[in-house]
Structure formats: C-alpha cells, structure tokens
Image: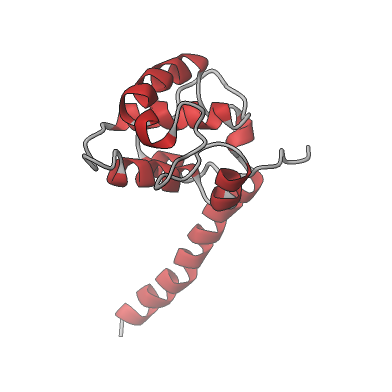
Length: 146
C-alpha cells in the first residue's frame, strides 16, 4: 500500500519534469543563439574536407546519394528538430564508408561548420561534443523574435 503514494508522486513529477525541459527548448536556445565558436568551424571545415566533401560536395549541395547540408532542403528537413539529433545522425551514420568512426569532437566541429554555412551565428563557446548536451538547442530556420 505504501507503493501507491510513490507511484502517484512519480506519475505527477515525471510529466512536470518533461514539461519544464520542453519549456527550456521552446523558450531558450536555438541555433540562432551562438551555439558554436569560430575556431570550432575552422576545425570542422578541415574535418569536412577530409570526411564529408567527397559525397556532400565542397559547397554542401549534396550529390547523387548524399543530401544537401546547406540551404532550403537541409533547413526544411531539420526544422523543429534539435542539434542533438543532427549530431547523432552524423556520428552514427557517417562517413558512409566507415559509419561511427568519427569522434564526438570531430562530429561537433563538422556540425558547427554546417550550422555556420547555413547562416547561423557563432558564439564564444564550442558546440558540445555529445548529443545529450545538444538536445536543448532547437534547429529553426527563422530567427526567433525577441
């Protein structure tokens, strides 16, 4: 019988936690918040040239079997998702000839370069090198009002 109050408390607390985390994303950080550094973009540019450009192209326009990583199609595909999802996609599926071979810092640097090439502003700190730390960063093609 003592378990019932604990179960009820958990049932109330878990949705509250989820709602408060959602509120952080909704009201908080987006890719417009300066979520990567200019130095990280430089590292990402070199890593992209080495690991990604052969399929996605130097201009990030994509190719026969590789989607574009810049422009309207990319932004439409990722609109409303979080940066952690993009990080995970790159980390687990790229490069095509050796998926999962890139370390977190390299993936975050490539992701920073992709964000920069899509016109999102740089900030002072590097984009974190793990997906969980990036889940509070929303990808939104349009700069939020405010």
